[in-house]
Each structure stands twice: as C-alpha cells, then as structure tokens.
Amino acid sequence: VQLVESGGGLVQSGGSLRLSCAASGFSFSSWGMSWYRQAPGKERELVAFISSSGGNTNYAHSVKGRFTISRDNARNRVYLQMNSLKPEDTAVYYCKTQLGWSDYWGQGTQVTVSS
Image (cartoon, rainbow, N blue to C red; front, top):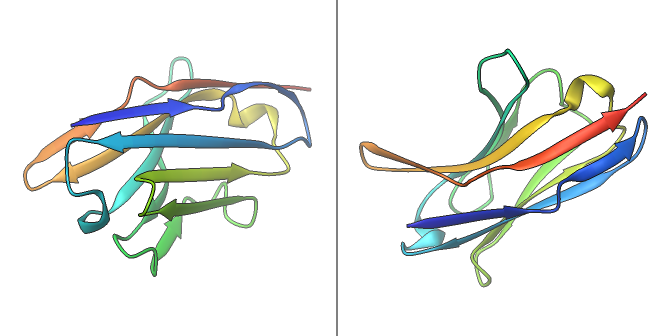
C-alpha cells in the first residue's frame, strides 16, 4: 500500500490549494479515504472522509463549507480542495486509508497559510 500526497505549499490567508493523494497497492475503489492534519504541538485530527463510492462525505466542523473532499476511482486519487484558507489551517496534511484493522498513511504535505 502506498499513499503519496502532493499539492501543499505557502498561500496567503483567503487563498486556495488543492491537495492530491495518489494511491496504489490496494483496491482503491473498495475503501473509504480520509484527510488528516497535524499542526505543530497539536494532535493529528481528522479533516474529511469520503466513502468508497464517493457518495458519502463528512467534515470537521472547522473546515465545513470551506473544504471539499472528492475522489477519482478511475485514477486512484483522492483530493482535498481547500478554499478560504486561514492561518489556523497551517499543518502537515496526510492522506489515510484503513484496510481492515490496519491504517495506512502517506508521508504528508505541508500547508502554510500566511496572515
């Protein structure tokens, strides 16, 4: 199983970024996918989840209405569109899937929002 995130960077407050996670090594279309983030000195937190078909999504309260999770099962990719970014969104963002009892994580991509 391999998850590789990309798309992070430095953006001004109010700006947008689109994160991408390329998945391989498992039947991508059969499993839900999540985005997490971890800010310095804080615990890792769930940002968004999408079901295997893409029909169900849920979001952390802090990002609802600003972030959108989506997936392309033909390309084995999951995305996180982040709009109206705030300095408090600064964190390392991770892609994750849970296959049975095992969690698999990507290496993370840094998102920095300047005020």
